[in-house]
Image 1 (spheres, helix red, strand yellow):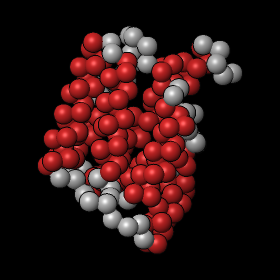
Image 2 (cartoon, one colour):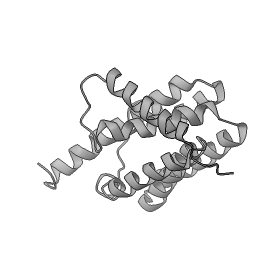
Image 3 (cartoon, helix red, strand yellow):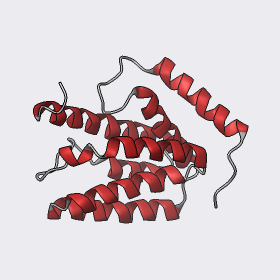
Image 4 (cartoon, one colour):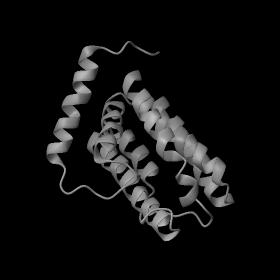
Length: 171
């Protein structure tokens, strides 16, 4: 059920962004400015506090589809599953205005993912961030959820930027 965005929602987003900016060390080169990353992190933090067994099951199902798509080398299915995973998580924050902002930013940046996701698909060392997010939600570990969202977006952002530089698309 969607709820109406209130002034306190907007204020919460603003205050969280200010706090994140003060706590950031040197910005990590990524596919999006650090301010944008703060919106994803805030949505993830709120969603983690609102998590339910149904959300965990849904995220696990989506991630299983993502892993199968990766194994098949199916880029389109992988990208759709990645989108579905992130937006199932962020939707659990029940902040439609924030979700609208994130979705618009995703639309602006996601087209570049097709450059990065060419078989063999890039991966991160260690446990996949989505698996770690699911495990953290099961433990109600909000800080781990936030850390894994950050790791997922920053590390894949670095891979994306390297891919775009290597292909001469950016300098």
